Amino acid sequence: MNSTITTSISPELRSKHYVFLICAPENFVHSNGITVLLNAAVSLRSLGMRVGVVPSTSTTPTYARLAEPYTALPILWEVPLGCSAILSDTVSKERLQEVRTRAAQICHYTMAPNGLFGTEGPWGNRILIQPGEKQAVYSPHISTQLPSFYLQTHFRDLEPWIEAASHYPSKASGNPSRLLKASVYPGKGHLKPAPNELRRRIIRSQSQLIGRFYPPTKSALYELLASSDLMICYDPITSLAFEANLLGIPVYIPLDWDEKAFKNSFPARLDGIVYNDLPEFMHILSHGFDQQSVVLSYRNALERNTSVILELLHFAFVDVSTTRSADQINSYWDSRQLFFASLKLPSLAGRETMKQALPARNASELLHDILERMGEQFGRFSRMVSIRRRGLERRLHSLLRAWTS
Image (tube, rainbow, N blue to C red; front, side):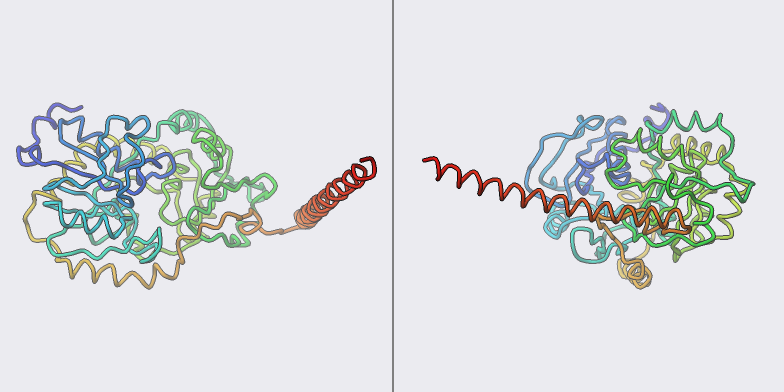
């Protein structure tokens, strides 16, 4: 840890008890947002700060500690009185009331745009800010209007693949006739057919659908990405798009974004990620993008993490300069709700198929679909016959026992 940073922390920052309210912190393996917050808590503890973690959607103790590498973080099931609380997006009404009653200071650190996933239900993340509370966002992608503090996750399992990718030829395909292998990721989005011009470049039979739990490990996921020529992504805010870029994989997100200028001020480079601009993406497929600059920006962002965390705390709990009022912040998020509603997120259907994104485009793929359907029907017929056969066998055994008794 940088000793200069450690000694420069003000007594006012050191005197506070920081509490991170995190939705399901035990699920950090599957969520970059949870990882970001836990890493921030670990970093503050390494600086000698008093830090705890409170699950934000439950008040019922279900575990005493987190798994590695977060076993040293204290898990608290009650918000400490007088703490300085950092709230992530999803928080239950009971927890929100508790933190507003018990915390001395509150800052909402927003990892997904406020209201992107609606107002109700387990994914609802629309929170109305109250007077005296502050709000910061994870990055300009979340908001170009509110203060952003970007904390770069260290993708440790990705590092060997980044190193290997630096020695491979570019994924760019100057030959427009060469067919490509795609990874397709729904995330929290809706699968829909990719544009025809893009589909014509893809070999569906060699493409893969990435699910929330498939591939089952990070290493297997990165192996799959590294073997792909491109990724089609239906989740507009997933970190997986940036991870693919670090491997030199261009990413097409067939959705618009309402604050289009966010890429200009993003702390890391997003050269190979394209939102709903097919000509631009086809150009990247042919000519590539500067993967090395993306990797360098990632390394630089990692080095800034400690400073950024302290800047977040200073903004949230020390800075008394004029900021936006609660009404102004809520009005800003209100202005974006119509766009968020048009995305209809989250979509978490468990039966997505590659054919939803890459439907048949030639005779061989159409034949494959027909044979697949025939196989499914035959499987159902076989199961039905097996069930009826077992029923007949049981009846026959009953008759034989009755006849021989």
